[in-house]
Image (tube, rainbow, N blue to C red; front, side, top):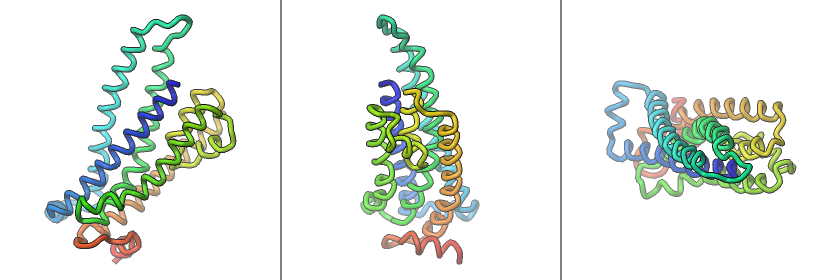
Length: 224
């Protein structure tokens, strides 16, 4: 149950702060402040700074929430159950998987956010990361009931869903060390790839205003 609550917090946090990245990207394009910034720094530097700043805000919020949860668990008295000792690994896991999951999705949110120029068009653009996130959350529900089933086992090592499913399997004690290593390394490598891909799309679409820019067009524009 503690692992599932942690997964729920991860789901909401990654979804919310990823959308903050996309909204910030559109706001910069809409008020054209990004044109001034680009006179000083490169597009990838703007993107990395934005993702890092919003990510730190997310970590602060998680720290406050985790601290409140730990204090509450320490004060609660249940026979034969030490809630505080359960809570510490879960809180640490939430921090760790938030960093991996947020990094993976933040650059994707920034890339799709850079393809539109108005906040009104942003909801449609954000469907791509949401489509990737939602299955991970639902598979985490399955993992809470059957953590060693085939679907949760495979999904826990698939980078888009790893941050949501693997914490549940780890807490249930059914994830061997090699699966955890594959999940961590795979998500880290996928995040690094998205940093490169997202930065290129971001650079190609950042100065293009008007209608929505297709991802393929932004990719080609960055190469020109």
